[in-house]
Image 1 (cartoon, rainbow, N blue to C red):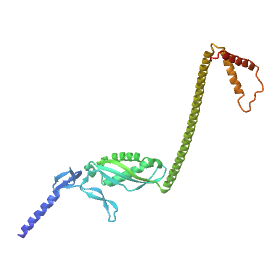
Image 2 (image 1 turned 90 degrees about the vertical axis):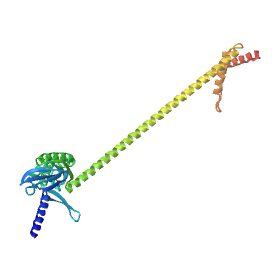
Image 3 (image 1 turned 180 degrees about the horizontal axis):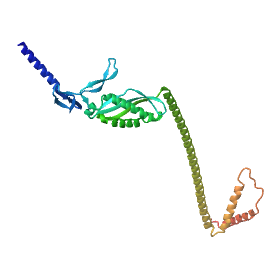
Image 4 (image 1 turned 30 degrees about the horizontal axis):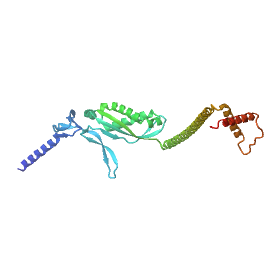
Length: 329
């Protein structure tokens, strides 16, 4: 009876082992390579699968795994895993020294984004895929940077990324890997070069500041001159308009005065038309007005009498007689 229980227990254990060995559940975006007696048999994709225990078994591959220590630091280690992750993976390669075309040693840290698209090739075409990708990236990065001077390297990061991605994608195609992106995180030149670059940058900033200040002074002087020019033009235009208006006012005044005088003379002529000679009267009145202007003022003295004055006086006397003959006026 004890022997029977032992047999039953052994059968149960064997069944459990067979189930554990034979049942494989593959997660989404994962693949498992199955070998039959050491030879490739099939590739399992997402879902439930059953394999023959002890005859069929999954093939493991090296995988880069990141671990954290107790103090929070992160380190990477290689471990075997039967499950192949088909998702995009990022590798943060350690910083490495690279020599440029002009013999300057710089430190570069790179990121690589890749994806396994053929699990069978990733297993059978390369022994250590993570290390192979890392070494391939480092060597090609050295070759590309070695063709560029320091200044070109600092400003050509995107060009280096594109060229490196193209080279790696072509080289890793036989491993069933697709390289999607390559990013250079940091490009650090030596301390002496950094100091020289900072001095050069400061000098360039000072030069630009001086140029901007000079341009500002120049523009200010131009604007000031233009303002003074416009002010002078406006002043001259104002004075011109004032003189024109003044001349027009004088002309209008003279026209009005002439019209008034014309009207007065016309009335005088009409009044004297039947009583005497109006021309003599007008001449005599103008002469008297002129004599009045000559003698006007505190220091003016008349020391002689013009010869023509006798004629004017006779005209005045004639006017007087004319009015005496016509007392009705």
